[in-house]
Image (cartoon, rainbow over all chains, first blue to last red; front, side, top):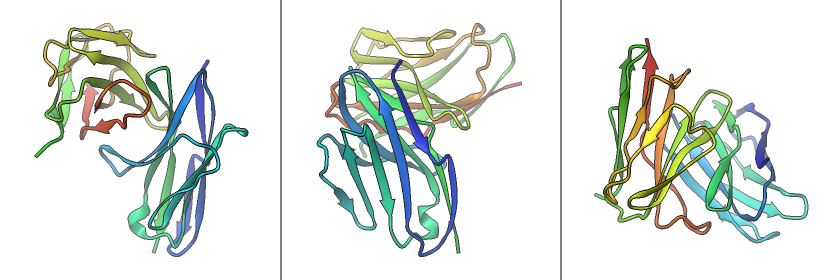
Length: 109
Length: 114
């Protein structure tokens, strides 16, 4: 059975800290891995990763895929209270997205 | 303004009633999806449609039904057969149903069964 597992499930940090969120997967016919940020409503797209070892970066956020280890990490440096959200990892396989449980990040002032 | 709209934002239903959640997109996307989100369980796929007049069951289709008569619209009916319908429902769309297309999400409908 295809599955995506994220860790930790929740995390509390202080502003300025750096965090690393993990996503591991076991799917048939992997095509891509996506990260989304969800603040109360619609998830918003962050990154799509298809190639192993190539880092994608957007401001303080970055992500990398390791196909050998079947995993990905999402890094957030110099966290701000506005980074508080649920971060969702999803893997595309056979035309469908399979989501992990999400990591709930809370950044305290 | 292009995007995905869902209505209503909040919905209350009595046990035994069917209820239909609306999802409309004006992005000219071929593929549309319905997910259910429960606390601690991420998003689970209910149904998806890659083209008009065609749809497939996702992982948790029991107790739900959909139609795709128009490209822009993909309504979801939660039937009385769904045993635990209280959840947050998200609709998404993508250009096509292939792996390289990002899915864009609507704002969601929170359904509560009284």
